[in-house]
Length: 282
Image (cartoon, rainbow, N blue to C red):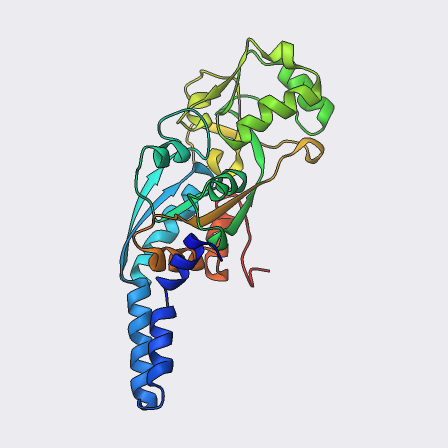
C-alpha cells in the first residue's frame, strides 16, 4: 500500500476499529456499537467536491440528491472533460491546484492521474460502460450507419462533422477515420468541440453530424439520435471514479463512490444511456 492509499484507509473506519479493539475488554456490546456508529457518522458527514466529465453527468445529477438525503454529505459538482487542452479539463484543473475529493471520468484518463499520483489507486472503481452514438439536427433524415460501409459513406457525404475533444472524439479522429481510410477527406470538414456538448453544436445547425457518448447526446434538445456506430468500429469507454490523493474528505468520497457503484444506482445509470457496472446489478 503506497502513501496515498495508506492515508485514504487511515482516514476512514480504521481509527475507530482500532479504538474499539483496544477497549473491547472494557466496553459493553452497546458501547462498542455506539463507537462504530460514530465511525459511520464520521465517514459520511461533510462536504464532498466532485469533478466529473460529461459521460456520467446526467445520471449523477439524479443520484446526488438521493445520496445527500441518505447521508449528511453536501456534494459540490464541477464539470469538465476527461482530457483535452481546455482549462475546464479535469487534469488541467488539478494541475492548477483546484481541490477535489472525487474524480469521475474516462477510465484511461483516471488511470493516468493515478499513475501521476493524483488519484488513490486502490480507490479506482468502474461505474459504467459507454458507447459512441451519432446525432443529426431534429427533423433531418436519419443517415444510414447500420454497417461499417454505410457509416463510411455517410461520413463522406456529410458537409460537416463534429466530435468531442475528449475520449470519444480522440477515438473518432485518431482511430476511426484512419481505419475507414478517410483521414484526408475529413480534414477540412470534421472538428473537435471543446468544453461543450456536441449535440448543442448539431442543434444550432453548425454541424450536420455529431459523434459523442450516447449518454451525452440523449439529454440535448433539438437533435435526433441516429444510433450507435457499428460494433465492428465501436469504442467502449469505461467511466470510473476515484478518490483524489489530496482529498480533504476521503471517507465521504469513498462513501459516495460506494453508492454510485451499488445496485441501487444501476437503474438510474442505465436510464441515462450507459451500461452500469455494479455489484448485484445483473
